Length: 324
Image 1 (cartoon, rainbow, N blue to C red):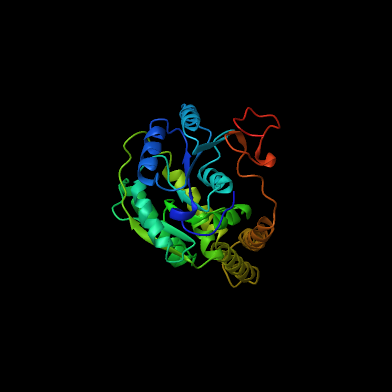
Image 2 (image 1 turned 90 degrees about the vertical axis):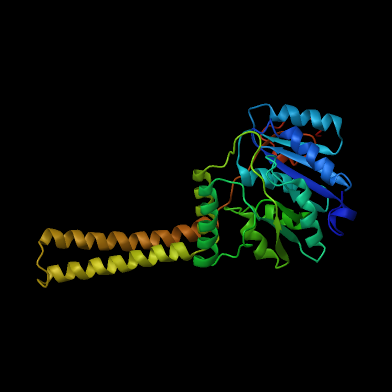
C-alpha cells in the first residue's frame, strides 16, 4: 500500500498501539479508538512487547473479528523504543497516530493533532495540559526537558509526549536510521523543521499498573543526553585533563621541594595525573568509536498478522498468523 500525501481524513491513518501486559486495557482501547476515529480509513496496529498476561490472546481475537486490526508480537520484552519502532516500520497508511494502550490520552484528542497537521506539519506532538501522573514523574519530566533543552542544547519539541501524529514516510526514515540511541523526539528536529506541539487532555490510568518507573526514565534520559549531545563527554574529558594537569603540577612541586609532602605522595600524584589524562583520551575515543559501530536489531518478532521482513524474525519458521 502506498504511503505519503494528503491528510489522515482523506488518505488514511495507522494507529500504532504499543502494549506490554495491558490485558485489562486492550479491548477498552480498541473500542475507544474505533468510536472516535472510525470515520477514517483506519488501521489499528497493536505491538505486543513480549506480554505475559494474555494481552496477545485478546489482540488475536480483535484481529479475527475486525480486518482493520493487525498485530506484531515480539519474542520477549524489548522496550518502548523497540515497540513503537516496529509499529512505525510496518504501518501501511500515510499517517501514524501513536497512542499507548493505557488510555491516558483520550483518542478524541487525536482530532486536535490532525487539525494542526493540516497547516503543513510533518509531525504533531501532544503536550499534556493537566498531567495526571505522580508528582515525581512530573518533576522528572521537567528536569529532563530543562537539562536536555537548556543545558545540553538538544533540540526537543517543548513538552512533547509519545501521543503524536507523524507522516509515515518520516517515521519510517527515522526507524531505518537504526541509531544507537533511537530517541524519536530528538531525531525529528534533525530531519525536518515542520513539527509542532498541541495542548491535549490527559487522564489518570483507570486499569492496570504503569510499566514505566523512575529507573527506566533515568536511563532513558541518560541515553538521550549522551546520544544527542557531546557536551557531557566534552565536559568529562576537559575535567579529566584539568585534573591531570593540576595533579602533575602538584607532583612537580613535590619533587622540587616546593611542596611539603613525601616522595610517595609525589609518586601518587604523578600516577593520578597519568590516569586522568588517559581517562580523558579514553572517553573521547569511546564516543568516536561507539558512534560508528554496527547495531543489533531493536527487536525480534515471533508472530504477526501481516507480512514482515525476514530479518526481523528470530526463527525462520515461526508460528505466524497470516504471514508468508
